[in-house]
Length: 417
Image 1 (spheres, one colour):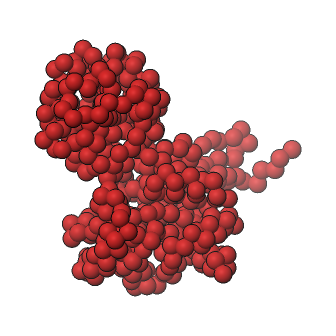
Image 2 (cartoon, rainbow, N blue to C red; image 1 turned 90 degrees about the vertical axis):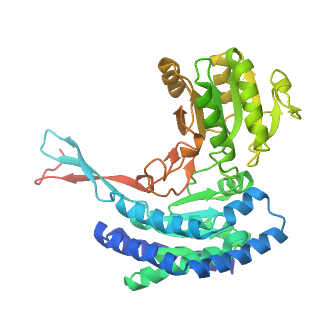
Image 3 (cartoon, rainbow, N blue to C red; image 1 turned 60 degrees about the vertical axis):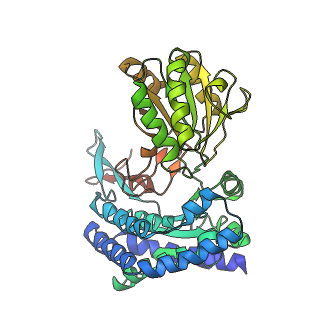
């Protein structure tokens, strides 16, 4: 039964993808505006359904970070609608072309951007992904299959109803955006086998989910592994600036992948900066996991070994380490980073440029909070995910990352000798 249902869902999505692939930018924007309007009109219903998911999540003992991701408030529902309107304002990449070459025989070789086809999103307690992914895939000319975790399934269905209302009002098939009706693991496994109909799988969630999807899928997978994000305070840092960025990155919202998880401090500024950090973090009730060299600066911190870093806490917890020099910071990040986001605080422009060049992560930052490592904040509108693998996208994924290029060859009757 699961195999048949997975095939039916995938086949319908593949057929629907053909309907959206050729829509003009104006037509797509018109539908997207209807989606945003429908979400706003259904706000009360969406929040009412979400409350039921929250009650069920609490009964199941979901972590605070999971509950935070699951919760929808009027502000977050408005945020979903506003994100769709931001996508409307972005240029549609589909159909863009450029001259790649003109051959000696007169043939013109162009490359044209086209949709990927059908994208399968697999995610956990993130109901806002339903709207974000639906709108991004639609604008980029793709159909999308959304498989939500059981924690947020009812909220996602309520959001999908608004999106389907807009599709129906525009005479488009609702299978352009499909929410899988059940979070059944067997059905998800079968979807991951539908390589004849689905072109790409994007999982968002915990490490266990990412590993399962990557190991099971017969379809290419873009991985979004954990966000072990570091803040390195260099010897040439503005310490007031460093403190503000530390607090924002760690405490502004803890249960997200771009929150800071580790603080690295150059030994030359440790005596001055760590007491500042200790006082400010204590006021925010942040639990500290410290190496031996930094331990004395923090009341109640627990000591961790030098090989025990690399945790993604997703909570008011932070690892702290004092390092000898710049090279020590780079070595630490190479060993314990997850390829997500790394930040340096320094007033030395050469050091900042060196850090940006040498650190291998999807997003590398100088003198700015890691919380800006987000598609919306980086000008992509909403994001469908942050890829920590390098094929075929790296970092926050917006419209262009949901397309590919094809060759277009035109001539005047040329034949090959």
